[in-house]
Image 1 (tube, rainbow, N blue to C red):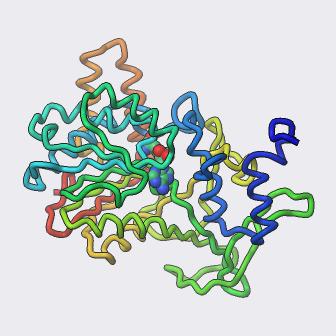
Image 2 (tube, rainbow, N blue to C red; image 1 turned 60 degrees about the horizontal axis):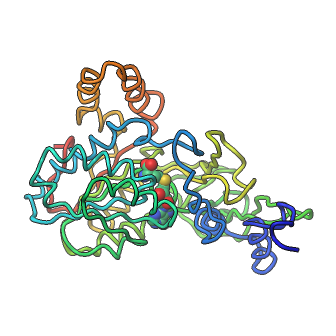
Image 3 (tube, rainbow, N blue to C red; image 1 turned 120 degrees about the horizontal axis):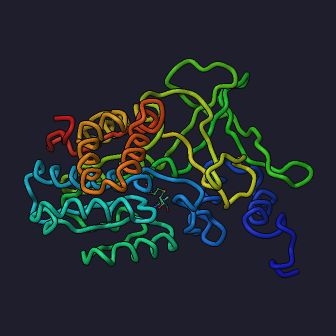
Length: 361
Ligand code: SAH
């Protein structure tokens, strides 16, 4: 039977997952998540329609141009604080549609020497999204390089941006019970459908005494990113923006989104965006453990508020009265104290010899 004729359950990623589970047994959750997002043929990131109002989910730079613009101005002033190196790598991790970096570069053009010093490097695993970024950035006329992995970016002082990048890195989940912590797995039921299961007992030291049913999430990709940054000989200033708590905690935060609605992470593998919260306190601890300094985490509202997002929006509104209510609504959404403004946090990770960036100092 050709794949075009096969019923949905027998083609695509579900078929790949079943074959793998038959062969290897239940999968760890991070393996499942990685296959769903990054499978070269059926993975979600190969589907470029994912992000934006007409896609599955919307991100801050897609809500308002002011988001990327503030990042661009922040990068320019940060470059000044770094001592105005003649060349600086502006690295974006997981640039999505390229909106953030395009807005950032446009705004940063007010500081001509910065723009002359900037070398733009985009780290992106999805070929489909890379193509979209190429189209968007061709308009800027700047030289941009693409890389599949962070270690491919050439040496030199670097300013690094990651917006909703870490949340996409796969997580393991451990569930606490009578036997201690056990690996959460993805397995098959007797009908061949995916379901969660429990695997081996794992030695794990949580941040606090667990209660039965507590779930611990472990994202080793964070250590990999930090180690890759640490390997750079020159100064690094990185801003990670994502949703998640400021402090360590237990809880199952795995979520899947399709067409702006939550779906079961096991339904339609490869067709929904699967993420989990970033725990910012532990992320800062990991950064310090490898020798970086960290500022924050602070809420998105505090970071962007103190960098002048409201004032910039007001100037835009004055310049285009017809679009004013749209601009105002978008910025309110980004800064909402009970919404994105507080759910999202910003953590700065920097070489300890660099001063804290704005708005921390
Ligand atoms: N920063 C963008 C997109 C966020 S979605 C925005 O704010 O709109 C996550 C992005 O990270 C996508 O571009 C995805 O393809 C990319 N990505 C996910 N895992 C990655 C990895 N391991 N290496 C590089 N890029 C990755």
